[in-house]
Length: 515
Image (cartoon, rainbow, N blue to C red; front, side):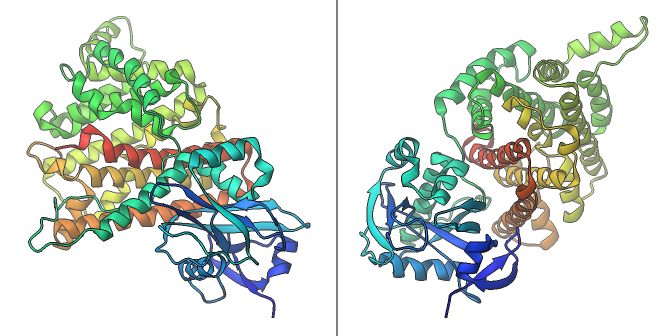
């Protein structure tokens, strides 16, 4: 009897089953998996498909691929197929998913929701000759070089995987499974310390698309004179450099290597974090929740010129010039107007204004000594998030996503879910720091610990679970839009994913969150 494949929606919801060859003749969307096994040195096990395979025979690809059977969990199917094809057993970890639709050989079509698994093995395969003609361990540099010079030697799905996630993304999959493997192998000693109760659990997120420390340093070299010129963070240049705003820009915007364009994101981070520290959160630097509303109202004049009569204009201008936070905001918006269209500039301004509204609400909680319910906090956090930074994706990339596309409900859903995921990650990484006296009282783990009467470790685990659930909602929303996306929208959606990956990596390493 012919193998039955699981048909799925763009979000991987099962919609039926169909015979394998019918699926591939008609290009029906179905569930699949791809496995990448690494050795301890990070070399990837490549398989050459047997010449007798029903399509793509003789081409080189990742370690193993296959389809789950009806009623079979995908992870179970991946382990089964790894044994059947390569004679190997290995602990596998899901690292990504991808949706693709491509013509392959023999007039067949692959249209797959592909679950990507990775693992580490210290043994060579015992390949099934009916499945694999040959195999070899290759460094990722060798893989990238061969794909560049002889792309037709590789399966289309493997090329799409490398194209979508980048060779550095594949390297991060190895690093991820290596760390998990090392943690599992460490002995548990009686009485051993478990670390901070506010330690951040593993988060579900794509691996960074690019890690280029030289480029990050170049952006910081441009940023630091600007920080000094506008006057924010006075006397703290070493601390600001340790925050790594240039690294943030490099990680999040992988579609450009122009330091001056990346500088715009670094300036955004510097200006908005200065406002957060001096106006909103850190009482040690003069933050006072009783006057935040008034301060933020005046800050609107730094975002968009306010036109007064000749009697009052000089008074406003002198005030704007006297406050480094406002100077920073004003200079940042000037750079936005240099690189962006008027519509893009208005979008950036709108996202900052929405953030100001939610900052005022948080100040009211503090003044009234209120503890908001978690649902209200999460709703507030969508606006009080990294949306102002996300609004720069196409500007930094050097193109324009049309305003009607940026604001379309289905695209807006993707963007706001990404913003919520990134700010929950921020809450997790900043939770330990925010236990210090004089710093803001509101973050998701703290609210959960109080509302649920649970330990910090349990609150951190719940917060990570909420982050991961939002990430899955984001992926589903993206998959709903991708099949009909224009090339510009595809580029923007890839920018969102790059931004998500870079944001978590930056939080993990930034000096801003070290105590």
